[in-house]
Amino acid sequence: MKTTRPTWLQAGLLSGVLLLSAAGAWADDHGREKGVHGDWAERHEQRMQERTDALRDALQLQATQQGAWDAFKAAMKPPTKPETKDRQAHREAFKDMNTLQRLDWMKTMKAKRDSQMDQRDQAIRSFYQQLDTSQQKTFDAQFWMRGDGHHDRGREERSHEHGEKPTR
Image 1 (cartoon, one colour):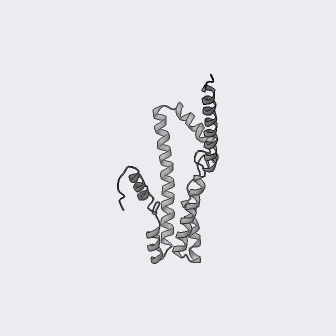
Image 2: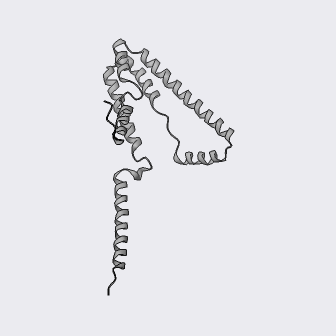
Image 3: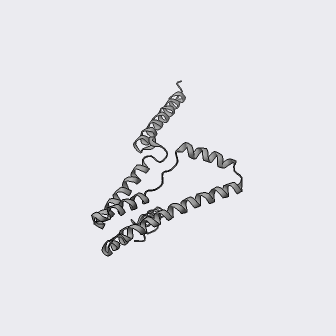
């Protein structure tokens, strides 16, 4: 009498191999080979550039305002993030710190972020002063860190997932 155990074992191994190869193909198609976040940074930078271009076009800047625009645009660029190896080295150092050292480090990082925000604040104010009244109204209507309604859409999408009705 022939047993079916080897056949089931072979089928299980074959399906496991197929599943792993399909998962690898999916990861390649979804940008996972570029790192943990895939090409998120590239897409984010492209969206930022599109929004910046749309704002510039809507403002209809004059030639005399171009220098102020360039300074504003440069100041609004996010700071570069440290390399992965630098972050990993910092995590290792963080593990060796005691609580007071960690608090000091967090206070230093907060001061650094506050300084960056102050620079952005000054750049926005300086650029805003270079605009005429109609340009200021356009700027007021179109510029904000998240003026695209991103947070509202996210809340709606999450409420749909939980069976709630949308808010809009």
